[in-house]
Length: 96
Image (cartoon, rainbow, N blue to C red; front, side, top):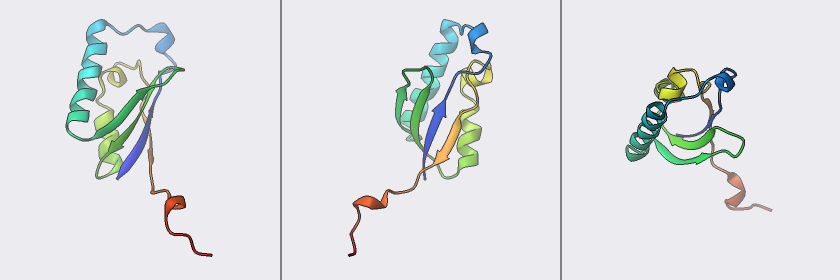
């Protein structure tokens, strides 16, 4: 299944500043998820945070895995919001 994952800064983020090592650990974690096929696409959002298309067998497992993101664990990022995606039917055969 594919999921849309929205990642935002936590409410406490304005009083925090992640260390360079934490930012690099976050990037390495996401690179490993990409290399393993869990993260299919990832973007930074202009207003802060990130979004990604992820693939996983179940939402709970994905939620648990993304809860291990280093900046989520430090509290700089809020727990990711995860939405299951369905196929768009508008491109399929049309019946009149």
